Image (cartoon, rainbow over all chains, first blue to last red; front, side):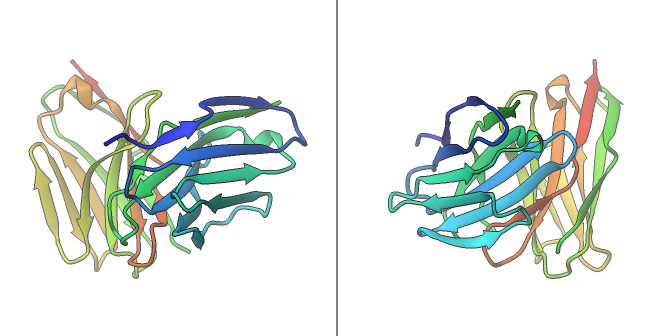
Length: 113
Length: 112
């Protein structure tokens, strides 16, 4: 089976712009979770989508949003980018059952200038 | 919400020695505890996990123990090898959904 893929892998934006990141889960997986990884804050949960519905949400501002399509692919959007949004954004897929292994994608590295 | 603390933040061991990383969590409802290894520039990869109905789990050189009463769990790596050098993350999750709360990470360096 192909692993989790994320596009693009690298992205440079300027403050105030918006960005959309994409995640394709492992075939058959219905849950996609998004995490932000920074040197200062570590790995932080953004949100989880399961069967096109947001099932869990972390403590990020409303500028961070996401969605999931019927084929389980997910996108996350960040509007009005700030310098502090520079990070590695990781998505993880799983079958959707609780306590099942989450498999991470390679991440999208976002740099906000 | 859940809070996971991980210690130490860095760990240097001699090849062949053991490494121990400890994590504590705050939410007694958490019942799933995975450990991830992240090599430089790569994605986190699950190395072992434990659920709350089990006190200990072992997979070759890696073992995890869980003390639900004290709300802490630990990762033990025996006979360390240079390829064990990486950042290790503990995490805690609950039965509902797939939200994981991660510890701050431990950078392990195995010196040959």
